[in-house]
Amino acid sequence: MSEDLNSILEPGMIVEHPDKPEWGRGQVQSNIGGRITVNFREEGKVVIDGKRVSLMPIFGED
Figure 1 (cartoon, rainbow, N blue to C red):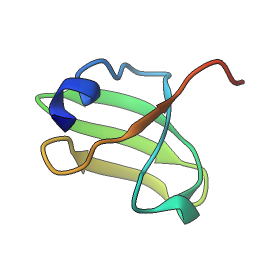
Figure 2: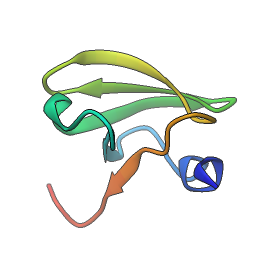
Figure 3: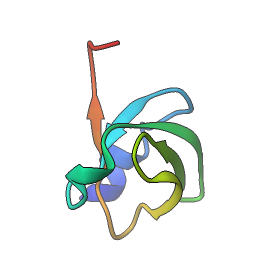
């Protein structure tokens, strides 16, 4: 489920929102109790409910 992948997200990781590609990539600021704060390039700081949205981590890119 989405919670399993979201649980690995840590501050500093880069992610994308699967339903909001226009937000661009974002950097995880915190992940506390399934509430993930991400600073997106085009949208700014957003708090994501990890139980409802499975963020896509971006690996191996700067």
